[in-house]
Image 1 (cartoon, chains in turn cyan, orange):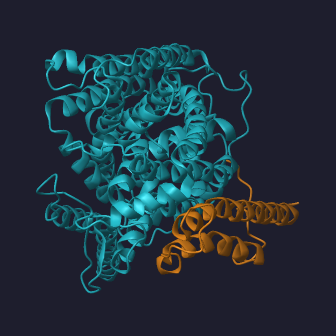
Image 2 (tube, chains in turn cyan, blue):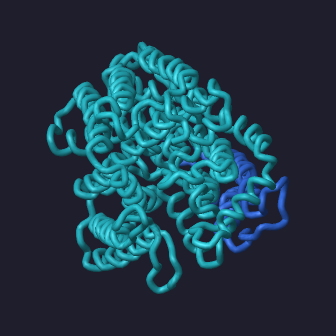
Length: 543
Length: 89
């Protein structure tokens, strides 16, 4: 680290923003307060009332996480073109999900579904299938929350608070601990309204910082031409692992990683939470058209990896952690006060998704494990109580994860999480369009995809780790290197289709489908006046 | 929920508007998955190699195509609603 002491100016600015969003987080419970605050729709989905712009900020704050801000440019810094896959990934994602998210929104609105597993339960009438979808979601989300802490840690490291190897663990992790305690408290009291409100601050800061960074830093480094010249120099040096342009051998990997990640993006429970919280079907559609504004920002952010190379960040530092390349670049380039603003953007950028992810995981636990298996008679008020507690547990779990276990383990698990969550695609998206797939076939397909993906990823080693070192391996039958998650997904589909044919031929009984055709295109019910609806704010089918 | 006839009862499943919307959504996906069409360094734009500015340029382009799909589908849905409403009246 070049900066040995604490950067006080930057730290002060950082703290001011942190206090501001904390106050907002607690006040959020009063924002658009509903009549029936005890319903899980209120705490867990913000009353399903968010319009186009609130949803835009919420989804942007949700999907473009602090870890993304740190990891994507870090990958570009280390490997060059390969790290830029995030751009085609987010370009592909929105046109793709445009096709099925409105249907998921409609059917969830009609039947009061809160989680993707709720939908699977209703559509296929299968408890085991809904359970594996819920468990996969929780499993994929947990390491993702833990990684948000890695994002905050990177910022705190460069600020000079905590993180140094010579202090004891308590002093080292105290700032992180405080940040998460505050986050847990306002998520508990305000639910989804807290991250929705804070997302305004987060996204505004992020846009500001990126726009300033991509104009100001190149001015200091002699323009983009000079930046790419020094990057080309680095990647053409003997022994360099990266390349400036994707080579012919890496193109399959690039495309399959972008495509597979795009398919997986809206299978994550926290993405679904953001979508279901919106007010109408067209709110969802409009958002798919305006979300690319964030993708553009992510693309520009990726370029910061090259700027870090050109600025000489990490040169001569033995074992330099590439995760620190962008925070370090900011500190080297910006005046101290603006470094504080930039770090606040990353720090708050970790809090918003961490809050939404913990709410999504809590919703899954409450609806698909607690109510389904432990206490079927739970009232909506019980559900809300359990979900609030579960959100606390999830966060404590994530914190313990990062503090007690190797950080590399969280990164490995998050890579695996992407592969796993993709295996729920057939049940969820397939179910939105057809009831043809048989529930046992879907379960078998899921199991095959999970097993194959985990087994393949286990066999990948990297410099940092012996197993789970990456997410690409040879695609059987094609011979090119591709994204393991996508190969597993194709296997999953094949198994599901073949077994469905077999089960249908054997006339294995089908289960009850509680949804009907028109549910998938339904609009929001007209808002009932308070006098008409003394009990619930929305008509919700018994489930 | 409402008991009216499901939207689309009067119009065929495949309409020109729906086909066009589908194509608008497909185009950005195909463009991005065709990696070999953009893995080159030249022509540069403002110092950025082709590989980078081409993909960045597709971000706003994909947004425009998605807006087009949205408008096409909204018109299609309104037409369906009108057709269904006209039949039941």
